[in-house]
Image (tube, rainbow, N blue to C red; front, top):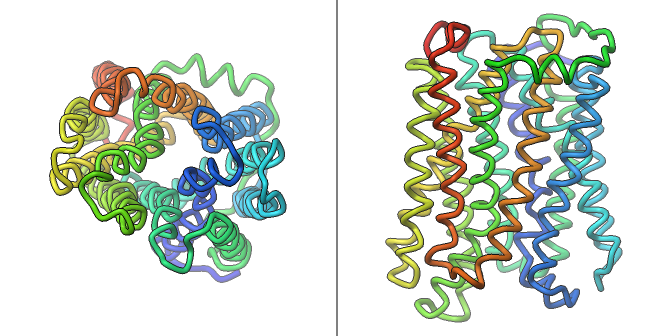
Length: 406
C-alpha cells in the first residue's frame, strides 16, 4: 500500500464510494420495468428502495452498538461492506421473475452499505483535521453521483433492461472493493482501535450539541431521499404529455442524473467550501431554506413546461445536498475521538429510518394529493433542521466546528 497526500486519499476514497453507492438506487432507477416484469403493484415497488433503507438502519444500529467503526480498520470494514453490497445486487439477477428474494437481497444490500457510507466519512475526517467541510463535501458529492448513476445507465441505449442496470451497478461495486483494499493510501497516523463499551450509544444520545447536529441531519433526511426517489417519477408524469413518447424514458433518466448527480455534486462541493469559511450552521440553514422553498414550489410547474421544471429540479438538487456533509462534519468535530465512528453511525441509522417514512408517505399520499402538491409534505424536514441549527449556533460548543466559525 502506497503512502500519499490527503488529497490523493480523498480522490480514491470518494471514487470508491461513488462506485459502491451506485447499487443503492439501482432498483428504483428501473422501477417501472420491474413493476411490469415482476408484476409488483406500485405501492409495493416503493420497497425496492425502502428495503435498502431498512437494511441500512439495522446494519448501522448493530455497527454502532458494537462500536465497529471505532474498533475495525476503515479499509477492512468499508471494503468488505462494499463487496457484500455488490454481491447482493448481482444475486438479484438470479430471480428474473421477482418474488420475495429480491426484496430480501435489497435489505441485505442496505446492511452492507451501513459499513460503507459512515466509515467513509470517518476515514476522510481522519485525513482532514482542517478543510474538513470541503473534504466531506467532496465525499458526499461522490455518494450523490453514485446514487444517481443508475439513472444515467437507464439513459444509455445499450442498457435499457433492468438486468443490465443492476448488473452494471454490481460490477461498479466490485471495482470499488478493489480500490478500497489495494489502492487507497495508508493514513499518515496509525489506526488506534478503541475498547468495546456498551454505553457508546447512550453517551452519544446524552451529548446535546451532537444531538442538535443530528436533529438537523434528520430533518434534512426527511426531504433528501424522498426527493431522490420520487423526482424521476414526478418528471415522467409531468413530461409525458409534453415530450415524444419514444424518448421520454431516456430524457427523464438524463434529467434525473443531472438534477440529482451533477447539480448535487456541485452543491456538496460549494456547500463544503463555504462552510469551512463562514460556518456550518450558517451554510446548513441557508441550504435548508432554499430546499424547503423548492419543496413548496416545484409542484406548480407540473406540466407547465419542461425547462421550468428542470431548472427548479436543478436548484433543488443543488440545495438539498449542499448541507448534508456539514451535519456529518459537525459530528466529527463535536464528538470525542473514542466514539466518533459510533456517533456518525447513529446519526445515519436514524436518518435512514426516517427516510423510509417519507419515501412511503409520498407513494401512499400522491394518488390523493397529486403531483402538484405532494412534495409540500417534505418541507417539514427543512423546518425542523433550521430550528436545530439555530439552537446549536447558540451553544458555546459550536465554536469547535470549522475552526471556530459557527
